[in-house]
Amino acid sequence: MRHSFPFAAIVGQDDMKRAMVLTAVDPGIGGVLVMGDRGTGKSTAVRALAALLPPIRAVVGCPVNAARRRDVPDWAQHAEDRVRSIPTPVVDLPLGATEDRVTGALDIERALVDGEKAFQPGLLARANRGYLYIDEVNLLEDHIVDLLLDVAQSGENVVEREGLSIRHAARFVLVGSGNPEEGELRPQLLDRFGLMVDVTSPRDVDTRVEVIRRRAAYEADPAGFLRIWKAEQDGLRTSILAARKALPQVATPSDTLRDCAGLCIALGSDGLRGELTLLRTARALAAMDGASAVARSHLREVAPMALQHRLRRDPMDESGSATRILRTMDEVFGPLPAAAE
Image 1: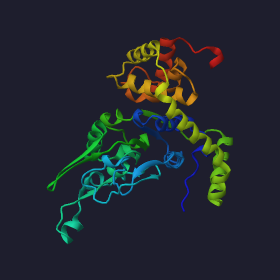
Image 2: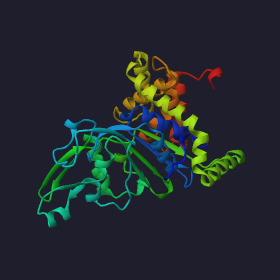
Image 3: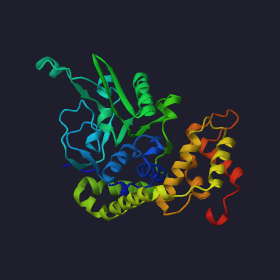
Image 4: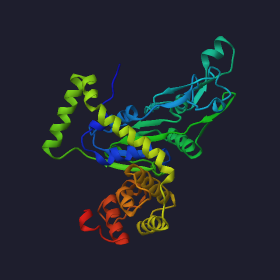
């Protein structure tokens, strides 16, 4: 049995881990884009999160992981009447994937052997109610990007070709990773990621040594390493489940709404998706913290990851987007109290 490196054992990269945990609390945040150097644990973190998440209930034999029998698509011929627990789906979308493999297509074998016109589900069906992971997302072909934009907008995959007229639910958390030196994302796709974090290689010796030590211990004895980290993994999983349950009860004061709007206006972010994502992310963080209401401190903590990829470039400002956000928060909210720094 292949084991995933424990999420709790990942050294550093706190922003990346926090962003992924918050999307686990509220998948409606819209996914995570992780950009940074090679070998900084981006892919490891995605697969580790999948192993951390609690299982979902799905109809046996349903190709889209429907939670209830009445949600199973009409074309799914092998779905049963019983439900069982399955791991949260995490599906890789390779760069070279064809459109048929992503969306699904006519089942050629059944068409030739049985003379039946049947649908063969694609990666989007498998990813429903889970995660769709794209490594090197900035190198994704434009026609696949267009497909993802359509599905991300509607939450539904529609296939109209080869005599087929198929539609099914396709709601997933989109996670992308890439190296910014290899190219930029199309703005339309960039805007579809709820959160964005930058990761870099550790700069201090002690952190790098700890990364090496843990990785060596895991490769030498994966099962033993998992046993060592089981308590922390279980604790984090319990916290995510508790936050999911508490999320609907987290209050959003009017002052918080004004803070969201004021910050986005000051930053000049386009549209209203920035405010909506900022608020959802702050609510998820408040739920993780056990808070009864969203506070300005929650907005401060998540604003860089929720807004940095939504800002227009300022040719007169050489500082990065995250730095601009921190500076603007001090202007809008006032300087952070010394005790909180």
